Amino acid sequence: QVQLVESGGGLVQAGGSLRLSCAASGSIFSINTMGWYRQAPGKERELVANITPGRISAYADSVKGRFTISRDNAESTVYLQMNSLKPEDTAVYFCKQYRSTLYANDYWGQGTQVTVSS
Image (tube, rainbow, N blue to C red; front, side, top):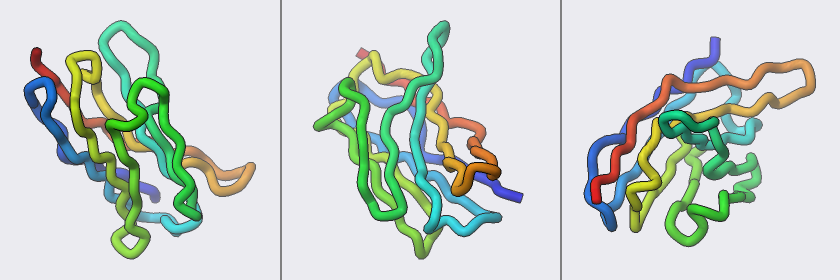
């Protein structure tokens, strides 16, 4: 059974930094694209960044230049380094493991709250 456990959220002032971690278990981590999404109150969940097994990454325009996604396949962990945080980054951040085949499933973590005060 695949489990994704996020950590690292919290309260930070605008301009500050946080590093989120997502530890995966129950799957062959290295073959899956991994992603970070976020959902603010009253808004839909949106993609923040993702990273392929070959470490090709993509970012939402709103976080480019401020956030960095990375992965450690030996530790089955994906990270999101968030710098220059803004109040509009406030949301619950979710880790996602993308399906590795057409017939596999996507998996989600439980989320971690990030709150940026102005």
